Every structure is written in C-alpha cells, then in structure tokens.
Amino acid sequence: MEMKICRLTAQGIERFIRYLDSLKTEHPQEFPQELLVPSEYATEIGGDTGWLDALDLSDRLKTAKGLDEVVHNLGLQSAERDKGFWTWCSAYLFNRLCKRSSGRYNPGELAIWVAEPDNWKRYYRHYLASIWQVYAAHKDMEDELVVLLNGPVNVPGELWAQVAANQKLITNRSMIGAIFHLFWDKQNNGRKRGAGGAGARRLSQVLKQFERTYDFYAMDPDDLVRLLPREFDRFKEIDA
Image 1 (spheres, rainbow, N blue to C red):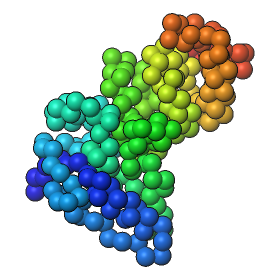
Image 2 (cartoon, rainbow, N blue to C red):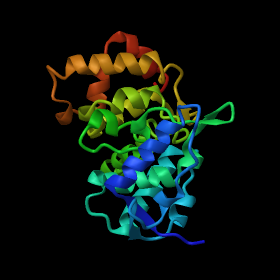
Image 3 (tube, rainbow, N blue to C red):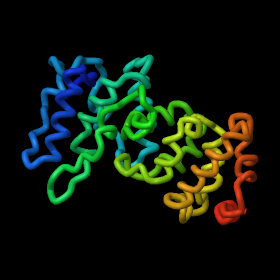
C-alpha cells in the first residue's frame, strides 16, 4: 500500500523516544505504527515511501545519494534543519536499520534515531541525516566520498566517527581528498588496512594539532598529506 512520507511532530518524537527507551527494558513495547501515518504524531509531506523502501541500506554512499534524491523530490528547502523529517525516516526504516541481539532489538544510542541539527556532536551520529548532509555538501566528489561512506548504514565505522565528529574536517573538501588518498585502496576498491582503527584515531589527533597552525581550507589534498608525520608513510606508499 502506497504511503506518503511524513514529518514527526514534537509529540511524535517524544512517542518514538518512549518506544526506543522501552526496548532497553524487560517490557519492550510494540512499534507504534501511528507514528508513520498522519496523526497527532506525524504530518504529511508527500512523495512516496517507496522511495525509502528502495534504498540500499547495505551501502552508505548509495543510501546518501538516494536520500539526496528524496530530499530533492520532496522540495525540502532546509532539510539539514528538519528534525521531524529525518526522525520520521529513521522510524520508518527502523525495522531494517536496528541491530538485533538474542532476538531483541538493540537500538543503541538515541542520537542514531533522533536527529539533533543544533548539536553536531550528536547530529553526525544519526544514521540518515548525517550521511545525506555530507553527500549533499560534497556530491561533486562522489568518488572520493566512498572512503567515508562505505559499508552498511548501521555500521558507520571508526574512520567516520573520527572525521565526521569534527565539523571543520567533514566540511573541508581538501580534507576529504586527503583522507581518500591516505585510506582508500584503489586497486582493491576498499579501505586500506589500519584505516578504520588506530590510523583514523591518530589522524584525528594530528589534524587537531595542525588546525592551530595551518589553514586547511586553503590547502590542496596533496599538501595536507605531505604535512603528515612519518607514521603515516605506510598509507602514502601503497599508492606510490
């Protein structure tokens, strides 16, 4: 049955949070289906939920691109601020996105599901809003974005956590290019060994130190890579 895409109201967001909280107790609630249809909990935007059904949630880059098409088709002018829309989308896709443990939903932290556009430290954790915003900002660099937006939507990974948590890094085109050069193995079409753990954490630490001295926005990706200390040579040399 065709359904329209909606936006959660403040009451709807509160109801969704109560449901998520219940999943961490001995008495988990049934999913509140009333969140998904026009009611006191949700207002209709339009479009077709089939657009969301078609998303390939096993691929973060494809999902981000698909979400960008949804935002465009709906004519949303301020999607980055639309808490109700993104939270509704995560509620609609909850069954496909939520991890399970011993047969029970394991929802994790609230920020995964409830978008918080006024708090980047939490907003970047939202499964859907965060990857859409990064894709929308850098869509002309789609080939390079794969280094950050690969793997399933509900498995963001350590590299994403370290880079996206810093708004100065994730909004910087040169930084995206440098990270792609460092951590993406073009021959094998995957991340280089070590990119998702200690390498990502150490890169974040080094870049925070460099921020005080260098203007990253005025630098080319190659210049950024050359600045990095010798401990990163193992990543640079693979593509040499």
